[in-house]
Length: 222
Image (cartoon, rainbow, N blue to C red; front, side):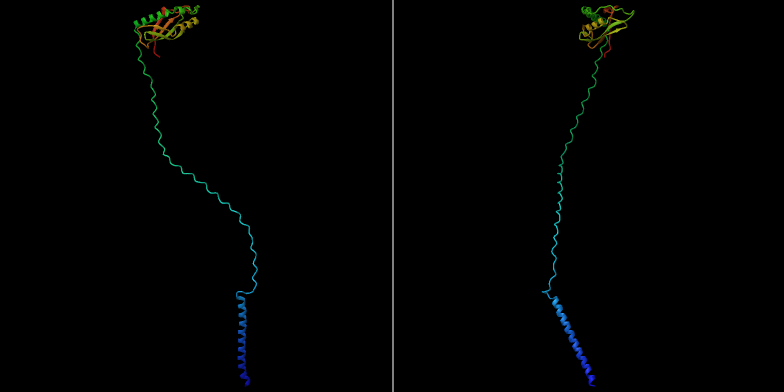
């Protein structure tokens, strides 16, 4: 009976001792953990690695500044072009002078007589021309034709030519024409600007002028 009473007491003692031991263990663990977490611990710090030296980055070239903008052209007031002068009117053809009326038959006879008179006065000059005889064809026609224009109180020989169907003394004809060309023959009763054509046949040997057979005709203006 005494043994039955001792067992609950023993259990109580064992339970108290276990509890105290547990508290003690927890206290020791708490102190140890506190020493680890307390600042200023004498634990040796971890060694630090030396800093790594890196080469400096290469310099970056700065972009060139943009070119300056060209100055804005100033607007200049442009004056309108001067009006082009109208071209001068082209002068038209000069009015034709009225054609002189042809000479009446009596006036033409008078003008022929005066022209032949002045040509006869040149006989000394004509006599110096070569006078070799030239056999002409039977019925052949040969004449020196004078172109003349009337001036104030005269008629001027402006040109001459030979019209011939056969051989003539060419040297005589050339010499006679040189004597007559440009001569001013005194003629009255004509109007300035009138044109005449004088036909002077050559003699039978082709070396002389046959003045009695000469004729005068009106010539058309050029």
